[in-house]
Image 1 (cartoon, each protein chain N blue to C red):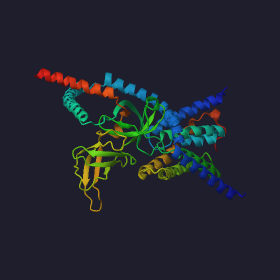
Image 2: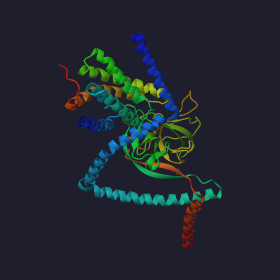
Image 3: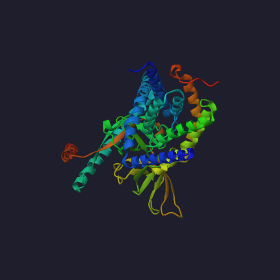
Image 4: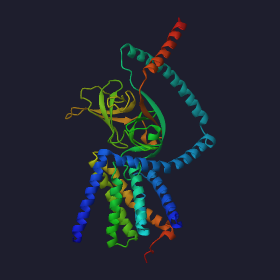
Amino acid sequence: MLSTNNIVAITWWTLYTIIGVWAQKVIPGVDFLAPGIVLSMQEEAGHRTLWLAVIWILLLEGIGNMPFGYGVAWYGLLVMFYSVGRWLFEARSILFMALLGAGLGVLHPILTHFLSSLANLTVPVQPTILEGLVQALVFPIVWMAADQLFPKRLRQDVKPL
Amino acid sequence: MKKPKKIAVVIVAGLFVYLSMYTWNLRTGHLDALSSYTGLDISGLILRPGIWASDKVVNFWDRYIYLVGLKQENDVLIEQAAELKRANMLISAKARSASRLERLLDFVPPTDWGFSGAHVIAHRMGPAGSLATVSVDKGSAAGVEDDMPVVSLDGVVGRVLNTGATVSSILLLTDSNSRIAVIGDLNRSPGMLSGQGYGEPLLLRFVNLNAVIDAGEMLLSSGLSGIYPKGLPVARVTKVQRSDISLFLTIQAEPLVDMAGLEELLLLKREPVLPSAQTEADKAPADEEVAAGALDQ
């Protein structure tokens, strides 16, 4: 039997995923779900983040058109950036989120170029750089919005002073 | 083991596992299939209700509220329909005589192509969507297969890249990885048409320096690649340049289809022609012509 918290969490993350997919349809090349991974790592138990990551990796890979691997590297490196950055920054500060967004913005063209070279595909570089810039801008904004709307009953920490 | 050494081992092991998974999937395609049958279909489930609702609202507005210019539009459409009927009559007569001649000359009957319509539900999405693609609301459950040709009423759009159960993604001919064997409509010069990305002209490659091809000439699919049927309109030549250092002409072309405004598409599927059906189909128009000729006399 699902607890109330689990029902609230499933509903909230389902809504977040629906809005994220629609946002990705409107602005191509940008990931609106990545801030959710960070928010989940900050606020929830690890197993829930793992489930979200698996579902979103399949979603990213499915709606994308590169050979499988981008989503795994994308979220894997995001988790690594977050874990390493936590040693240096306050985990829930907007500055840290802006830096994470900038990191993803730089990562996008590099990862696209690397994986397309492995698969022998030609991908124009300029659009991926522009998408990286938009990703860097979007990441902290989406994280802030999601953090504001995240249900209080699911939070497992306290806000910074 | 010391900490830096441990971190290095973890990084190297992670990279090894990742690259093994990547190359295994490139060879087998199992993970691509898994993500198509889960992620692509889930995206279809998420997008369809919104698109359905938006279509209903727009249709209601167009049909019952916004009726400005409807009479003029109707007149233009009636005129166009009449013109198309006239053109169709002439073309059907030519097509019938061509098929009779082919039969007389013992040509092997070509494979027939069936088609089914599909709605575009999204253009490329997400950070892993770097190729120029669109998603349509039909998948393997409706008989869609990889590499099926996709056309619109104006010309070739591309081919099926991935299929989920209910959603498929289509690689557009403007993408840099798209290649289509084409032939000039008037001068029959063959070449290979490739995309250069959205908004960029198409490039016609491997056309000999002494080949005859003019700006404005239509490019048709040659059928040589085995994916597209022969004779579909693909693009129009916009610029022909001779180069002193190359063995080939430098030719640019533009697609006949507006890729950004795609809403409905046709998916073509190879259907083997049964000999009995072919004979019946050829016989019926021939009988009609004989009857018409007898009446004329």
